[in-house]
Image (cartoon, rainbow, N blue to C red; front, side, top):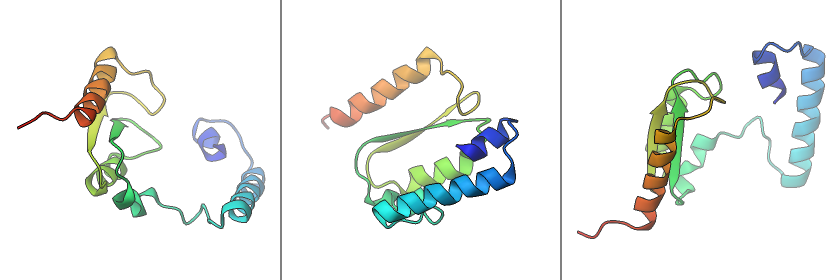
Length: 113
């Protein structure tokens, strides 16, 4: 989150960022034995089977098109990648929500051959 604040133009001194990230990582590691600096979602998507809709914004500054494509291609369960206009936190148009509902409906109620 602190890195996102920097990207958004808020002045977060590097020292503050470093101390905060170290504290967060230490806390997570202590409770879960996981180093969040080494955690890469793409390494685990092959173990995921719940339906997943990857909504990728064309101008997303946080998740690249390549990252979403790689996640979707390696995902073990039913998945779909949906490209949308805008940035990461922009509102989506009603058609996007309709496509999301349709995807979930189709995965829960598959069409019979």
